[in-house]
Every structure is written in structure tokens, then in C-alpha cells.
Image 1 (cartoon, helix red, strand yellow):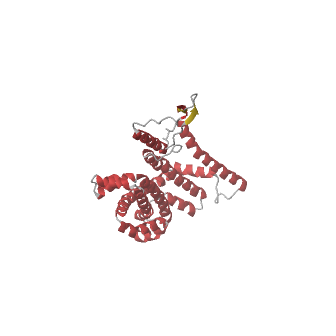
Image 2 (cartoon, one colour; image 1 turned 90 degrees about the vertical axis):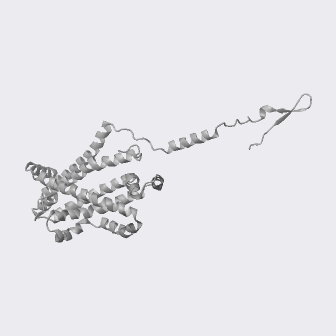
Image 3 (cartoon, one colour; image 1 turned 60 degrees about the vertical axis):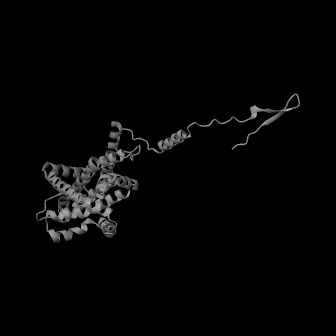
Length: 320
């Protein structure tokens, strides 16, 4: 407490007089000190709150769409300039015009549509089966420390193992059939989805589980109704990575396993271009594969991931 100071001045009569003007003002007691504490706490929480994401206008959407197109245009320009200046053999590096002409011919005779449809059917079917297999496995591992300690390292090892390594074994086991392709796709996608789900569950705060226990939720009700919804961002990230692995695995299987009862997909088109030394066909197939990957990301996983993050307040301003 600050010491009170008094100033003594002499009076005309000789007796000391205290100057009350020099005294500090007496503080007025706060009738409700808890109100200030609440207001300060609210202000602190407001300061910690992330900035709301403003709605994206059409101009921002157009600018965002033009940036990748500009990058593609720059790559095509550099590619064409290299062909004009260096003049490589057409069977080594054809120009953009030759590749686009080959792509136009493949679309005109219907071959491109057929191989795209075959690969998409295999890719989405294999990915759906992988999700149905990986999700229960992931939920089982997060519920049992023993199972996670036993099989967790194996799942991680399978994730880093190139799925193309399974192609020879799959051909021996299943022959040249669609089962070979689906097996390779599953071995590429399942470990990624399992690890993504486990990572998402690990990031769920323990308070959610404690609240569920207090409300009387059973073990599996707690997992399915509380933990899994809270782990959706990590789970979706695992699905996104699982799709990428399954798409790459599918292309590897279609390139190596050809003939027999197998249908002719994009990987088969790549292999056909290699056998015929037709680099234009090879590059046209690569462009189709790349375009499908970009479209799936822009139309499926990108919007889904942004929606989840926005609903949880994790999407900061300036991102979309």
C-alpha cells in the first residue's frame, strides 16, 4: 500500500496546518471485482480467437484459377522454346503441338475415353474397398495398445514400401486379372489410410473422452460418436494420401501387368507407347494421368478438407 503523504505549511498564527490538497485521492472500492476479471478474460479469449475467413469473391476465384493456368502456359512455352532451339528427335522429345495432336487423335477415335474409364473404375473401386478395410483396422488399433504396439510398425513399414514391389507376387497369386490390380491398389492405399486415422485420433484432446465417459458413453459409442468425428481432419488427410497412393499403385500395376483378362487402362496406354517408341503417346498418357489427379484434388479432397477446417475454425484468413 502506498504511504500517505501530508504537507505541513506554517499558518499566520504560527500553528502548523496540513495541506489536504497534496494528499492522493482515496480509491473507491469496486462493488463487483469479478466483473472486471470476467471482462479481462473475455478480452483475452477474443484476442486468441483466429480471424474469421472472409467469403471468397468471384475475382479471387478467377485469380486463383488463372495462377495454375499461367504456370502451365509457362511450362509449355519453355518446352516449345527448347524444341525450337535444341531440335531433339521427335521420338525422344516431341513438341507440345505433336503431343496435343496425338491427344486429339486418341480422343477422336474413343481410345482415350475407354482407357480413362477403365482406370477410373479400378481406381475408385479399389480406393472404396481400401477405405472399408482400413477404417475398422485403424479404429481397432487406436483402441488397443497391445495391437498398436504389435502391428503399428508393420503398417508404417507397408506404407513406405513401394507398392510396385507387390506386382510380381500378385501376378503369381492371381494371374493376369483385375484381382492383381486391386491387390496392388489395396496394398498401397490401406496403410496410408490407417496411419492417417491413427494420427487424427491421437490429436483429439483427452477432454473429449473424459466428457464422454462422464455422460455414460460406452467404449465404441465414445469412438464412433465423439472420437471419430473429432479426428475427421486427420482422417481426411489420410484419405487424401491414400488416394494418391492408390492412383500411383494402379498405374504401376497397369504398366507391368498387361494382357490376359486385364482391361486396357492408362498404364497399358503408357506401356503401348513405350513398346512402339511413340513418345507422343507416352506424354499424352502422362498428361491425362496428371490431369485426373489435379481434378480429383480440386473437386473432391480440396473442398472437403477446407470445409472441415472452416467448420472447426482452423482455416485462417487468407487461405482457401
